[in-house]
Length: 398
Image 1: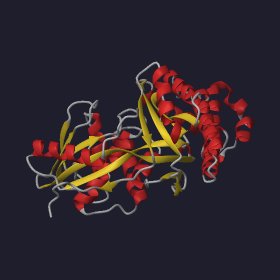
Image 2: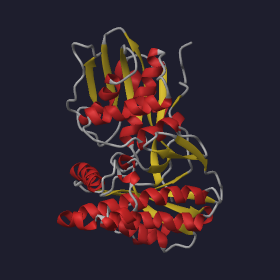
Image 3: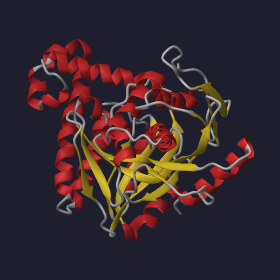
Image 4: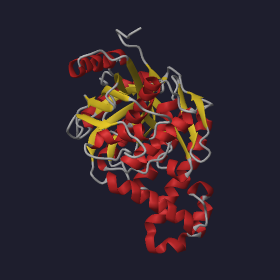
């Protein structure tokens, strides 16, 4: 069976109870922001390409209230984060700006406070989440967007636009977590819509909701529950390699390059063969994503699934960000009747796969993987869900 995804109301209730115990009062604000799964378009966002994520019912919840203390106090209920679970820092001023410090999880919150569009007051807050940490489902962006949404309600100040909100959260991750991520995760967490995936042009920052609500098919996310330690160093390396390849071809980014361009410059990359392979993945994945969305609109799940699987093979062979566990999960999924396609999703080196499957074959898929996978997987059966939102408290003040 798939893991039961906690109801939003249950998460809010848990956070409320923790807030009352920790801060001896009731919160009057509650918000939620989702994690995401990227259906296709991996490692294309920082190459000015296209990505196609959907928001998940797995969310980060933040509850809290204004204080007059000029301090921000945050307590997290999330497991597997570095200690301590509670942090306190001064509201930033021009003369005393915020800077990243240990614990690492708090830097995502600090970065958003530092990049909020407007003044910030003191507050007490509790955070809880159903997004698995380190699973490639964007727990970091869900925390950033939840924090920004909380501050919007706290201060009564909306971001100039949803795009500006997402960009502020991305900047927070760049500056405070030192992770040069693309824009996808913050965009989908901010702009997700129930029953839709989101096609994002990472160059123009234009986005388009694409209906994805056919009840006969669904997505099964399988968490390998492994995380290899290469991730932190390999992500910036891949980004640099793509930039170097684009420069050799005289292109602003790999979005502007074709596979023919790449072949014409192959000899210039002979000293660092990896550049050719990395560029081949990025260029082909950008085109695959455009094609996949066009095909999906016509309900052609067979071809869409084939493109998903091609994406995985490219990530495994050319981009080298897969791992044996992810490869095994994809191979096992593809052996099940009713499965259209499967691929790793997220940065790689562990984390999750996403599989498009007929609704009637979901239990067959889960059973086959459980029986044959050499680890202990976790499964989530997910339809596209809401983006960031304010949610009701059980005893919200008038």
